[in-house]
Length: 439
Ligand code: ASP
Image 1 (tube, rainbow, N blue to C red):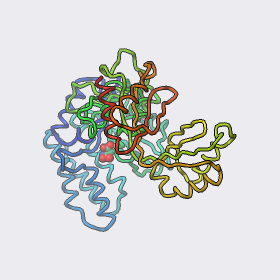
Image 2: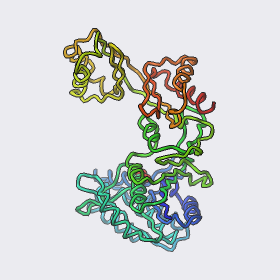
Image 3: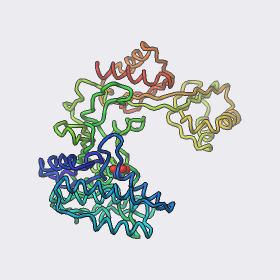
Image 4: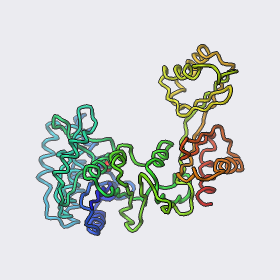
């Protein structure tokens, strides 16, 4: 049994958090591959070390001194080492880094040191081996990860014993350090879990899992206990802030469950994401898994008598949008109409050209544009088995004065998506949560 455990920035912020990580790791011998982020914020107005490192990189770029910032960075790591009573002196490595910074260092390499030093300290604290990400996370020149080569390298380096790996970076074919996009330690963890065919990938953070709705809109939403990878994709597509696609793909591909856990509440089971979920694995009594949504859409509706029997008309419409690089999010068709939901930002720059070309090529009776539209989606694997869900959804929205401008349901009935006016967005999410989750 092997569990790959990744700890985010808040879990590595100081010696107190390091101690929590150690007790979590030590409580289960299967937790022997540990991936860490750089230390994050200890309190609200604190700085993340990665931000401080990028700040140094910017100072270097503009030829401005950054001794003070570098001193803060060094101080944070030394505080952790002292607080954890570690017999390790990182100062020679910091001196060497400072030296390198004077002679030119890439922003990627400098930013990567945040996780590098974090992993060095964590390895010493846990008594595990330090395995540098530069030894196994192998990028191609196009910036993609060479999974086969990376997996083979990690299998060799992490063979059977406890290791700590810095997240967020890897190495280019020419030996240069390259980082992922921000938050990329999640990707490193997922790659490590996939490489080692882990039984589970645990992603430890400071929340007890993914919430059923945005807490800025719904008061104290419940965390999701079980969610499928498909549902998660639907939720993030419609706006839920969950994991980066790159942090899900490697584990999903290998059918490895992903468990989001809270370092500050280790007894909480968090959210378990799996390919398939058994019938008895429920989210309490709620029959939907989550509600999400986002603003910023427009609906273009083309009306033409006999539209559905006219060959190639959809293609003509799509060609106009394609020419203007406007992505169509949803298409809905009636007998004489077709409605296209598009991003308002993409269409607004060129709305009149698009309408003009549709008029010329498609020769419709009329075209209307509804602006300031938001989408709201109720996602749930159980919706497919329940009759009357969409009826209830409409009734609920109607009773609360939310005007539904569009509705679409995926063929697998995993979600129902409605288009509402942006002014009704928050209200729509709240009433759906109250009626479907708290029912
Ligand atoms: N430390 C990096 C960041 O702040 C990567 C990570 O924490 O995942 O973006």
